[in-house]
Structure formats: structure tokens, C-alpha cells
Image (tube, rainbow over the protein chains, first blue to last red):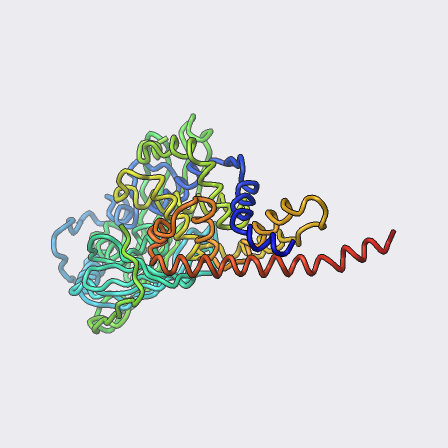
Length: 292
Length: 176
């Protein structure tokens, strides 16, 4: 019997595999589930909000009726620092934080799913397209690594012996890949959003600001409103040091869309930025597989 | 639904090839539930890269399954569940071969992910060493040595079970 076991092991293994999975069929709609999770990831808001990518910029840049005094900085125009307007001060701080190297730590996720809160830490130098991110994956266990060296992006994880080099070149780290929560984890988007913010901004201290906005929407799929609140702290050089914010999407599906269900979800994020202007040095991984 | 437009053809692909992909994922993870999770994760990965994946979506999914499995991506919390599934093979009666097959598949779940992946590629997918190397993005030599270590480990595990099983079987016969 022992002899039999050794000589036939490959054949028996193949036969055993067939026995094990013969006639296996999917029991759930994994395409729909994957699509749903993909949508949560990429749009932050889990509803069928027709605008698609809402994100931070969209939520902040909405035209606000209430409490805004009517003067808008205008999207795309360079911001001007002004003693009178907290909003313009914030825009100036965001502009000063752009196009310079920094260290970053982001913690974010959907509040209703505490297991989905992830943390990523890293640094980026936009001048050289070089940086890195180490991400603790929301569902636990592995750490996800990303390195960007002169525009070439490498991906690794704590369980893997090799790194993958992605095809093409990149200007930025893949915050979405890392945290899986959408574009607003990227400080670049955050800066843009703060710069273009059409929200109500109040100065709450020497270097602290509070912002709020609410936008109602009525689409083919749902009606509701997105409430967006946050606080910003500036560092000694008047650059962004921390941003904490929450975005709540509350509404109702249209009749015929998911049974007209009511929904509410809150996305929360904290971004900490430091070490502006310091060099970012990233070592190329040794064992690299090129992804085709 | 909107996503169906975004990911055109994906429903049909999964309807047609879902069972085969699930079989691979189940062998890679050691349980059917973990296999479905792995396949879903691979689908999500493909959705994120949809605009970069041209042509062979099934091939992309299959490669992603192997890469995710080898990376132990999200699989760690599944491992205890896999281990509880494992039982020594049955008694040495006329169904030896059947028991050996079951034991081998159960022992597969004990192997390190890379060894498991190589054995699934070689003996389930029936790929050549060169083809397996291509899927995993490693050298043919690595496939050879990994497969050989994996088979050796399977022999060890199933042989150990056969030995462990003997006293229990003798003990049972004393009860008569």
C-alpha cells in the first residue's frame, strides 16, 4: 500500500481534485456583490447617485445657498490669501501644500462598517513621481505595500515574496488600490477640494478651520442629500497638517429601485500631513514580476 | 442596472465559466466558501482594472486567482476554517484509493500557498511547467522545485495520517 501511495500520488491527486470540485456551481451572485463592493470603493457613497464619482471635490465644490456670503473663489483661479475670508485662507493653505513633497497618514472607511476602516502611511514627492504607501488592509491580516519610483509603480504585500510592477507610468500612488475607499483618500484630491471649496468655512482658532456643506440631489435612482463636515489644522508654515471629515449620504431610492429603500451611510476620514519639502527616497524592490 | 453596462460581458462570462473558476478557487483555498470569496475578490480586482484588461477576461481572472491565493490576500482569516476541515483518511478496507484521493486533497490545504498553487496548476489545470511558470510569473525551475516540495509534503502528510490511523483502527477492533 505504501508503494502504491508513492508511485501514484500525482495521478491520485489529480483524480482527488476532480472528485472534490466536480459539478461545483456558484451559490450566490458574486458578480453583483463584487460590483457593489467595487462601487462602494470607487464612489465612496454606496447609493446609485447618478453623478457617479461624487468624492470630496464634488461634495465641497457644490454651489451653496446658505451662509456663504455669495462670493465664490471660482474654480481654477489661483487662490488669494485674505485676512477677511476663512475660505480663501483655507484655499491658500491647500495651494501651498500642493506640488511639494510630504509624509501622509490616512485613516478612513465607512462608519457603518468598522471592519472596513483602513490606514495607510507613506510619502510622496510630486516633483520626481516617487513615493511609497504601506496600507493595513481593512479586512485585517496582510499589509499592502506600494512604491512609486520615477513614475514606475510596484505593488507588494506582506504575504508575498515578490513585487508586481504595473504596466505604464504613474504620477501618483494608488490610494484607491491601497485603502479601497475611493479617490478622496488622496491628499491631492483633498487639496483640490479644499482649494475649490464652496462650503461654509469658519475660523475656529489661530490655525484651525471648520467646514460644512449640504447638497440635495434628485436623480433617476434616488433622492437625498449629502452632508459634509470637517476640520482642518494648519502647521507653522500655513500648510495643511490635519484634515478630518465626515460625509453622510442620506436618502431614498426611487420606487422600483431596490424597492424604494431608504439608506444612510457615513464615510469618515482623517488625513495627517507632515515633513513638507523633505526628500523622499524609495528603494526599488529586489524580486519584481512585471504585470502584463 | 448601471454596472452591467460598465462591465459588459462579465455576467455571461461568469454564467458560462463560473463553475470552472470556482473549482480552481476552491482548490486554491481549501474550502468552497473561501473559494467564492477569492473569486469575488478577483472579480473586484478585474473591475478596478477593467479599462486595462483587453480581450481575455477569463485568463485575467484565472491569473488573478493564483496571484491572490499566493499572496494570501485576505485568505488568512480563512485558514483556521480550512484546518478544521481536515481529517485523517479512513480505514484500510477496499476503498483505499478513494481515501487516498480525499486525503491528498485535504492535505493540499495544509501546504504553503505557493506549493498549493503550483500543484493546482499542474494537476488540476494540467498545465506544463512552462505554462505554470508563466501564470505565476516565476521561473520554470521554481515551478519544478515548488511542485516537488509540495508533492513530498503531501506524501509526508498522508503517510503520517496512515500511521496515526492504524492504532485507532486496531483499538476499534479490540472492542469486538
